[in-house]
Each structure stands twice: as structure tokens, then as C-alpha cells.
Image (cartoon, rainbow, N blue to C red; front, side):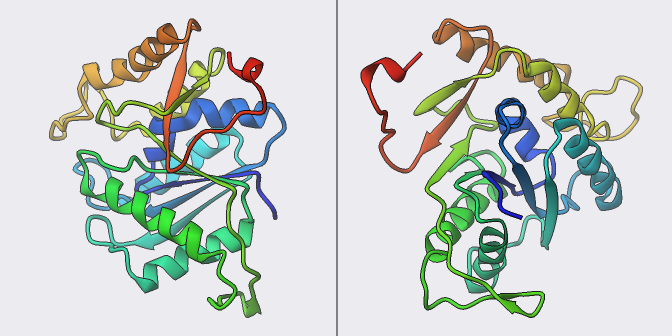
Length: 238
């Protein structure tokens, strides 16, 4: 199955928090989108890997993505080496996305920056003919995505561009809150973490509203890019 967009996240819920509204918008425009989680989030303070798997499936259904896979890397301990790069390359060659979305280049959680660089490196290596990979016993052809963008996570990194996601925030919030074990729940007696506060849950909307304010729309999501953003003509910007 060829996808238009493939979004990678170090943990289940990274993609939802970072760019779910953009994904929902692209799907509404007829794009085929998939998600690949690098780890099962097994080191998360709350919940379990099994529960996160159920929550990820529910979030994927809410967003309407075509496929979701998990590479099963070690949460907190995966590295950017040949073995992990080849695993990501297999996913890129399997789905042949034109656009790849991945973690923030730097962030509070060490897996985010690692995951970002790992996926970015794999996108380049996937286009090299002499790197040979197989999937299900069949050789894969080289494939290099046209564009690699990084969504913004915990840190308020200055975006290189923003996407108007007005009309898609409700779906984003629903997808995020599918991970009910991870976020604000006043009835929970599990340990508190930086993402279990009401302020963090509220930030999902107010951060998007603030980016929207800056471009004169209701809501927006921001991204950084590894190269210049090109446009066809001056009147293509909003």
C-alpha cells in the first residue's frame, strides 16, 4: 500500500499530540496516511504496553488512518544505529510516502530527539540503491520521501511553517484523549507526571489557538523542516 504521508512517533501518542489535526485535515482531503510507532511506550509511568496498544488502535480509528504499526524498539534505550535504521527503512520502502512526519528535533524526552534523527537519517538512507532490504521474503526497492517535517512537542520550538487546522481540533483532542491512561484524570490514584496535569491537557488547545492567532485563523499546528520551504508563487501563502 502506497501512502501519501507516513507519521513516525517515538511513543504511541506522540503523533496525536504533535500533528493529529494536520493528519485529520489531510485525510479529509483524500490523502492516505499511516502511523508508525517506534516503541510501545512501556516505560510510561501510567498504564502498560498492552493498554497503550489498545489506546493507539482507538486513536487510529478516530483519525481514520489507513494503517498503524509498531516497531517494538526499546522505550528509552533505542539508538540510532544500523539495526534500527534498517527497521525504519523497511517501513519507508513498504509504504513509499511522499511526506514523512516525525518527532521534534529536540525535546524534554530523550527519545523524541533520538527518534527524530533516526527517522530523518533513515529517510535519506532509504533512497540508496546499494542498501538492500527485504520484507516478508521479498526484496524492496529504494524510496526516498520528498519531504521530512518535524512536529513540535513539549518545548515551544519556533516553527518554520504552520498549518491551518481550523475545524479539526475536536478530532485531535478526541484522538489524544483516547490515551485515557496517560492524561488528566482527577479520579486516578496513579502517580502524577508532567503530562497528567489539567494544564497540559488544556495546552493541546491553547497552543494551537495561539499559533492560529499568529496567522489569523482559529487553530494551527507548527512544524520545522530540514530545508527551505518552497512555494510556487507569492500568492500561494495564506
